[in-house]
Length: 368
Image (cartoon, rainbow, N blue to C red):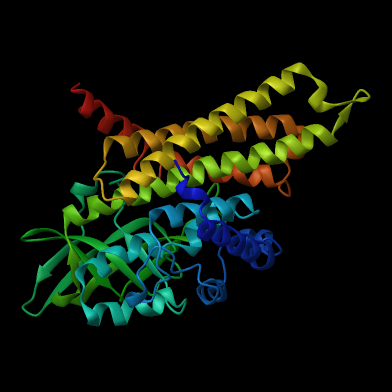
């Protein structure tokens, strides 16, 4: 049976992404990490080479492709020397735009989707609230009916790309229940400094008597839950791709590093640790890819997606830890790539639904 990840078209896509990362990202990533954000020009450059719009139809400004193509892009960005933080910052539209596209409304697509996929605007998804965490159903941001518009009041936190965003696809509560509104008028009350994902800006947002036209409604709770599956798959891909990158870096280090007159890789303990890292990466990649293909084919999976995310995150946690350990003192230095991956990896078991939330989903399927 042919491998959907190894078609000629997807091999060319990998080559395109790798060239982009090596040319446009790697020379600047450390600078962006210290600046706390990536430049807006990177969005335009990514759009220009056809990467930004992967997974979106051509008639909304995208480059076509499906979830499998998105997986290929994420894998190659990280394995070419990028990072999960870079993926989060550059592809935030992956969680901000699908709800807008799904409406099929030409006016909203022209105003928000087309310019975003052209790299001219930046969108974010604003769901999490202070004190709310993973309790999506318990949001308190209100949208009061004012006739032809809503009056929105509330706050959001941990919003990826929130500091640079031109609009926010925002979860609110109306008299009729949960809604998603596209909002352009909001305040960035604080930029959040984080353990990792330093090049990905994160912010707290405030909505104070914001007037939002009613035709900016782009869905409700079911639509949000539907797109969570894709977000969780992409986080799982970031996890095993980061683990693979750290394994590759550590293999090279173990061969080149000499201790007591012998290569580090000559030590049985080191070889066995590397073998275990490789085993876990292969298992995680195989399962996540399997689930991604099923989701891309139209299957509505919840439990399997939760399992995929937790499997990949656990693998990443183990591998990045071992990578830093085997690099020794160098692995603890800011300029070491494995140090960045170690910091970045920690969010993957939190974002998109925590490990505990994923386990609760799995437990419900088990009937316990």
